[in-house]
Amino acid sequence: SDVHVTATVGCGQEGPANVAECPSWFASLWGNQIMWLDKNLGGSKADWQIIVTHFPPTWGVDYWTLLSEKHGIDLFVTGHQHNQELHASDSPGNFLAPTAWLVSGGGGGIT
Image (cartoon, rainbow, N blue to C red; front, side, top):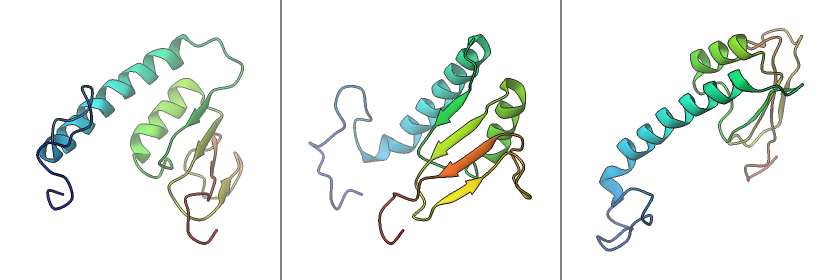
């Protein structure tokens, strides 16, 4: 917020110029990254498709479900939450099955 960031503080030449620009800057960055990811997963010849991201796939369920089905993603390794979770490919309630996903639980606090 402006309480903690002065007008002379920014995120460098590649980041938003000020706090007010952060939401639109991150939305644009996300839009570019999802196009890049879709393109590169589609062209990948790798035996395994593994996504490493900060937020678990519960953030953007529709997007991650579509991408998993389209490209056969094998595993998500995520963080953000402060508890460990493992959703195996055959776990009941795994909305991404057969894609497995885990939350490292190393986000801080009590794990």
